[in-house]
Image (tube, rainbow, N blue to C red):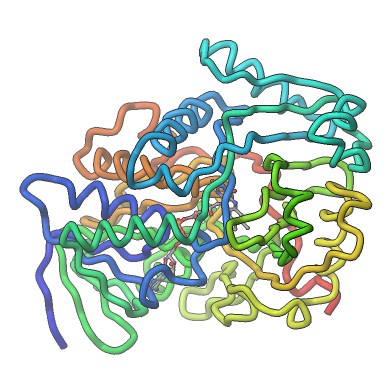
Length: 430
Ligand SMILES: Cc1cc2nc3c(=O)[nH]c(=O)nc-3n(C[C@H](O)[C@H](O)[C@H](O)COP(=O)(O)OP(=O)(O)OC[C@H]3O[C@@H](n4cnc5c(N)ncnc54)[C@H](O)[C@@H]3O)c2cc1C
């Protein structure tokens, strides 16, 4: 089929691919760029495609705290992004055995930032925010972090708007599934789609999220040095959306985003969206490990069926996960959610790394192949800025710290990411 010569092919139009395409398309002179994903954009099974996502700078790791502050500044001021950002503030609590909220608080002090973060105890929570959390499960919580500057964004809408801008800048968007990379003599020269077309380019960038390990294994099953290995694990998290009546919206409309990673709750929520949806997430992921016979590996791969990767009816979900979502809803809102039930649920898949850092890197054992993905459950908020770093990486201009954190062969021995799961989707009660 057609062999279209271009400068760049980006596989995957989630936030990493979209932001990369945006920054590349602003280069002068503009290069030829092909952005390819399975469906017309935005692809409904991308982690980046969602009702909403939290936008915060509240990180214990000061590196991402600074990056988060930079991203929020863009969310507030850039005409491409500002209308999708809602500065609701963010509450965060973890079990008292971790000192995460104290670290976050200290980071703002160290940075001398003008973020007006506070720490307060569970008793005070009962009387703040119009008492809506009076019933929240605060067992094991010593204090909470409140940051009025963080918030959330309308995820799918912001992603689509960005991709509209990308296409307007001249990027060629192709809706097709990539079957494999074209590899020859230690280099990647292009991709082949499942419908038999080939596309060639000088540089191929994989922004394929949770699907990265499988795509590389399918492309080079007999080349162990190319494989993802333990660098990126496909992990699925369950989300639920409740459609609120106008009266119910009144009750929740002024709540902040709330991450309650404590006790048995282990979940999060955000304020109602413009479509009156209240979303809950269970912060306890799953793997889906399968044999990959051609490469002889066991790999966690996301499901691609709509029932296990896109919004669907709750009765199509395992009953075990419905119980877990119920625990999140009651843990955060107690009796305030009595009578509310999810109208839609979803497994959402992301690529997770052992050290929580992404990959923005050349592949050291394959010329012209680059990786920019693995958001590790926290990549979405960086949509307005991530492409800037990918372009720097492509030019060999990443500052030292970024390069070391995001490179392919960094030392992952002993890295502990508490969100990397042991449990498998198949362990769930059906
Ligand atoms: C439930 C959940 C909640 C989250 N909440 C937050 C949050 O509140 N805030 C935050 O900052 N981050 C959050 N994250 C993390 C964030 O969503 C991800 O880190 C980020 O969206 C990943 O972007 P990506 O571009 O790497 O991958 P994706 O968005 O998954 O995009 C990858 C794309 O590649 C395409 N693709 C893959 N393989 C192929 C192929 N062979 N052919 C064609 N196309 C292909 C896929 O179709 C997909 O569209 C959350 C993640 C999850 C799962």
